[in-house]
Each structure stands twice: as structure tokens, then as C-alpha cells.
Image (cartoon, rainbow, N blue to C red; front, side, top):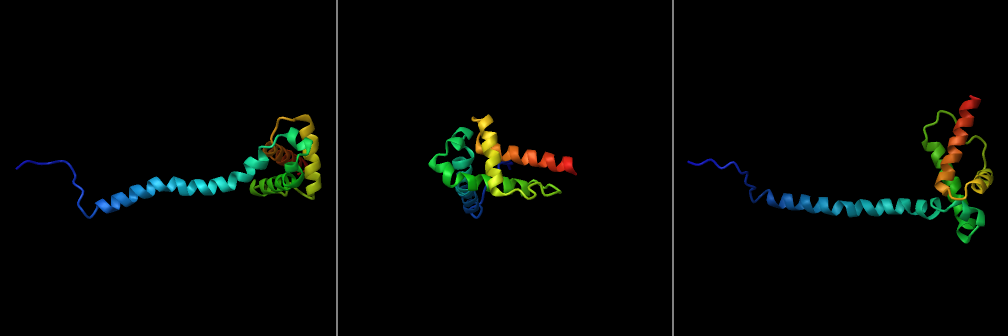
Length: 129
């Protein structure tokens, strides 16, 4: 009698393997659509340069200030700071801070502006503490 070391897949396991392979191949398509929808605003507004922000194009007049305020607010809340770093800062103050920042750094994107403001607010809040 000869010993065969190969493992044979029975007819009952074959459909399971095919279904698993199909799922693994199809999974990136399912996940990619969700991530693309989440990041659409980041690419649309967060990638705008400070130069475009200062020029006040149609895009920056309407939605970009709302996006910037939302990005700063969300970043401050999700940063796990033990203190409220936004304090009493109002949306118009965020926009005016961005105007000042962008005049000195025209090549930065709005996503960088949001993070710079969050970092500055966090530094001020910890210094005051």
C-alpha cells in the first residue's frame, strides 16, 4: 500500500472554497465605495489651496467655509483632548483665522489649515491650564 500525502478536497468542501474565494475577491469593491464617499469632501474642499481660499472662487464662497468649520470641530472633538480646545470660538472666527493663515501660506491645503488651527488651539489650551 502506498501512502499519498496530498490532501484531497471532497466534493462537499469545493462549493465552500469557491464561495469564500468569490467573497474575498469582491470585498474590496464593497469597501472601496464607502471610503470614496467619505473622502469625497476631503478631496473637494480639503485639497483646495490657501491661494484658492483667498481668491474666493465659487467653491470657497459656498461650501468650503462650512467644510473647514466642520473639519476643525470634528478634529477638536475626536482628538481626545481632556479640555475643550475650541472654547467659545465661533465659525466666523475660524474662517477669519484661516484667512490670516492662508495669506502667509498660499500653497497649504485647507486640510492643513484645519490641523494647524487645532494644533494652535490645543497649545493655547494646555498653556492656559
